[in-house]
Length: 360
Image 1 (cartoon, one colour):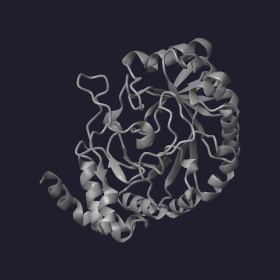
Image 2: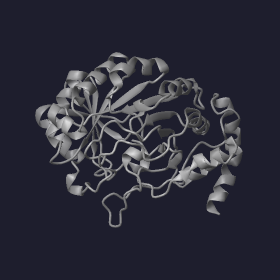
Image 3: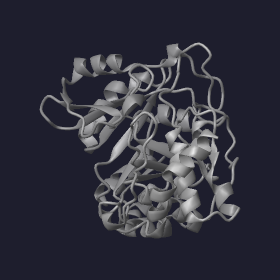
Image 4: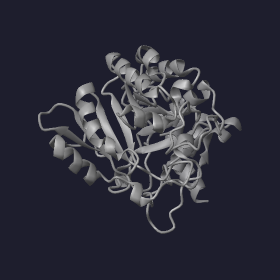
C-alpha cells in the first residue's frame, strides 16, 4: 500500500518526463528523483554484463562465466532514458568487465546524444579492468565517453598478476592506462582496493605512480562484497592509515570536495603535482550525501550496494508497462532508498550478490 501511494504521488511528474525524456528543461517533470531522506539522486550506475576476463582473488571464486542475464542494448537505452527524464545527470557503465560487451560503442553513441533536464550532455564514464583498453581507448572517446576509471590493485608486477591470476596482465593494463590518457579520457582514475597483509605494501608505490603517470589514484577500503567470505574488519586499511603512510614519503595537502555527494576524500601533493583520493565507506561512511542508484545487468534497481531487496524494473518492462508506469515505479523505488549501510554492525548481512554481479 505504501508503495502504491508513492507511485500515485509521482505519476503526474513522471508522465511528463516520459513524453520527452531526452530533451531540455522545458519538458522537466514536476519532481526530480529524491528519496525519503531528502537526497537528490542524479547518478546512475549501469552494469551491462557480469562477465569478467579477470578472476581477482578478493572478488571472484574462480569462474569466468556470467551468472545473470544481460539485457539488449536497446533495452538498456530505454531504461536509461527514463532515468534521465527523472533528473539523472551522470551515467557510469560498469560490469563485470564492460569492454567485453558487444554493442558497447553503439550504446555510448546513443547515450552521448541524450540531454539532461538542464539541456546538458550526460556525464558519461566507464569502469574497466583495463585489459582490452589499449586498442579500444580511441574508439571509446570517439563514441562519446568522457572519463574512464581503471581498476588496478598493485603497481608491483608480480603482486598484480597474483591478484588477477592472469599472466601478463600488468603490462597489458599499464598500456591501456597510457592509451586512455593519450586519447583524452581524463581525468583518468586508477582504483586500488586495499587488503591488509595482501597488497597494503603498494600504498607508497601508488603515490609515486600517480605523479609519474599523471593519473588520479584512488584507494578504496575493502567492503564485504566478495564472492567468498574473506572480509573481516581487520583486513580493512582505513583512510587515516593510508594518509599517514603517504605523508611520510610525499607530503599531502587536502583538497575541497567538488560536490557534496563526492565519495572520495581528495589530496594533492605539497608541490601540487598529482592527486590521491581515498574512498572510505567502512571507516568514514558517506551515506548521508549519497546521490546514486544502480541497475544490475539483468535490469533490477538496487538503491544501495548493500540492499537486501532488488526491484525488478526489467520484469515490468517485459510485461508491457508504459514509460510513464515504469518511471513511476522508478520514482517510488528511489523513495525507499536506505538511509545508510550497516557494515561492521551486529546483524549485518552481505547482499545476495557480490560486487561483480551488482556493478561497481
